[in-house]
Image (cartoon, rainbow, N blue to C red):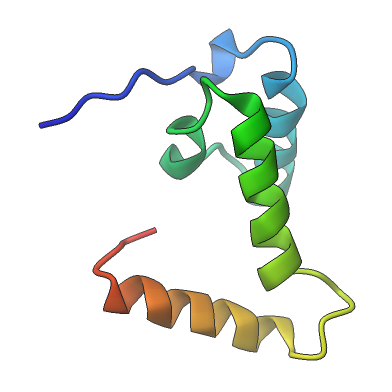
Length: 82
């Protein structure tokens, strides 16, 4: 089994702090998928920007529920529980 070093919420420093704070504000916690990228906050921030732009952006022509449904369907097709 692979092991990836991550930064726990209580140990976040620098650029990671506002990213984790935003996650807690948005979802109530920092999910594991975010912790997997925690040692490289720039990558994590970019990844979250892409996620937000494609699934939650208010100016999208598709309703949010539909965008999230597509994301869920693709995750299931890929056997990914995130």
